[in-house]
Length: 121
Image (cartoon, rainbow, N blue to C red; front, side, top):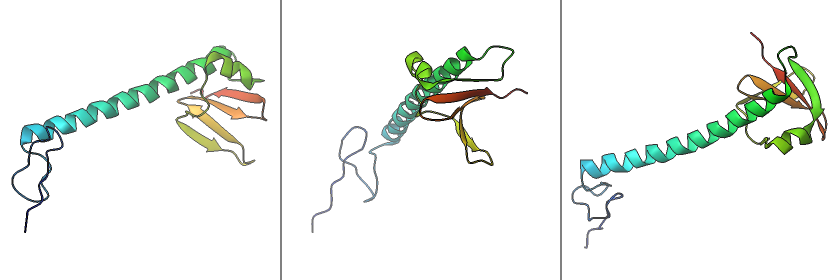
C-alpha cells in the first residue's frame, strides 16, 4: 500500500513524518501563520478605515451644540457613507434600531430620512 504524500502548506515541499503533519519545518509553520496574521490585520484595518470614515461623515452633520439632527439619507450617501458598516446596534422599546459607528449613531426614520445621534458622556 502506498503512503499518502502531503505537501507543506508554505513551501510545497514533501512533508516527512506523521500523516497529519502540515509543514515541513518549524520555519515554514511560523511563516505560514505570520502571513495569515498579516492578511487578517489588513482586513481589519480596511474595516476600521470604513468605520472611521462613516463616523466622520456622521459628525460632519452634527455641531458642538446638537447631540442629534434629522436629515435626508442621500446626504450621507453623497459624502460616501456606507450603511452596511457599523460597530453595534441598539433597539429601543418602540422597535427602532439605531446603528452606531463607535459613539455616533444613526436611525433610519423612513426610506429617505435619518436621525443622527451622538453619545455624550
